Length: 147
Length: 428
Image 1 (spheres, rainbow over the protein chains, first blue to last red):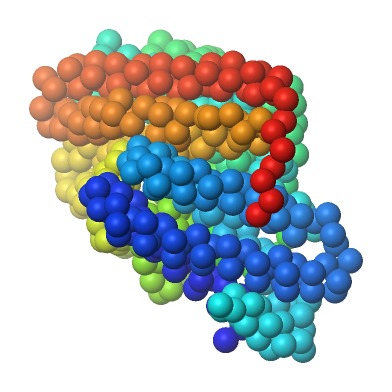
Image 2 (cartoon, chains in turn green, cyan):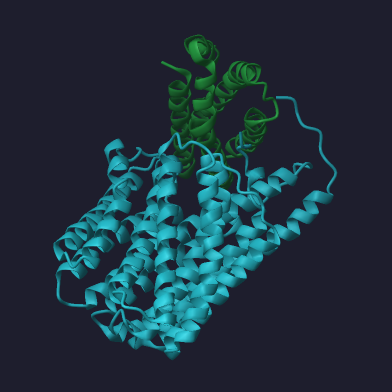
């Protein structure tokens, strides 16, 4: 599997976890909400790490663009990390309204971020990777799935 | 390479200005219908023509443009540089053009129709050129930019035909006026409004509702949309009624298909919320389905009331409800995002669903849908028109108030956040 397909599938899996978190919080099932949140936080942060440690440096080295799309993506990762912190506090406090509000903000932030990655950055990355696409993909997948 | 960032978007205040102007334009159209309920007796009633142009040009159009300023850079990676004061002038010209055009229709004054039409055309030609230029600046590697190009081309066709109609009114000529009016309306409704909704929904529905994407075959089918609109008009101009009927039937099938596919997807949403965004998209899907059904009835039945019902459902229902539901996502998120980016102190911010409060949102959306349904019914039961128009006016006024209050709060809180000292970030 190439990294655009893998990371796109991973985006959808994170969306599902966020949906589960919100469903459990709305149903006041806080045990299940915490489990869903832990999985969500782990997967989102591992996804960001795979991009920031493998994909973005490889893309920057190949294109010479360090202040282009990867800088924007890193900034948005920071915004998502802040929201995960807010969500963690809301989940810890059994705060349904907090989960609703921060959860929706995270969903919209991640979707507009994913749109850019899936429509622009990943196709560009696969293009500049050229014959190294399989190598890039293997390293990205290994980092994402590292324990 | 464009910088794919919301920083590449024009200022949110510019979009907010467009949103407020658009909501006011739609409220004005509703007020006109309340003042002249007989407008919906026929699609050719002067007040009906005035209301249509107030709603489309003064209402839907500014909201669509304001949303595109923010959406295009994010979704397509294209920069729409901030045109500053020219954008405000363009918006003023569009709104003034819509009002003058509507006045011209109501008073039967060809000079006012020509003046208003020219003003609106000049304003929109600028927007269409800017959008087309941005969309053609980079290769369209995915479905979304391709679909948006098709919609923008439909806008260009709408404007070109609008220009021809204004020219005929001013200078006369032997051109088939009624066939050109129909074609102008088809490019506007099916090509531009419908095309843009199809393009945006293809991304927004699966991603923001956390549901299945539209089938790949569906995306291929939607590519036929501008060709079908072309065929519908060509059949009419060449007096080949069968061609027009086939093309319109296919367009109606597309609208109904979109409605069914959207409803199925939103019903299967795994987003975990049942709020105005959820029910609003269900409503938009239902109105698309109804637009397909009434559009087909208008084409094949001899009863002209179906045309009126179709126009109300397509413009006020599918167009209006989609815009309302998107406004309730775009406005709070833009406000929250700009607060968050200014929030170096990490102060506590209002939650997203508190910026435009969730319950009034749902009430406004519900009353708008009921009012549009009442207006569509008014084609057959004229006594419902006045009440439905009054309800729509109050619903749009309530929306104006909700959005206005959120924008005022945005400016006030932004100033406070910018003045606060930064708090050191925790290491991740």
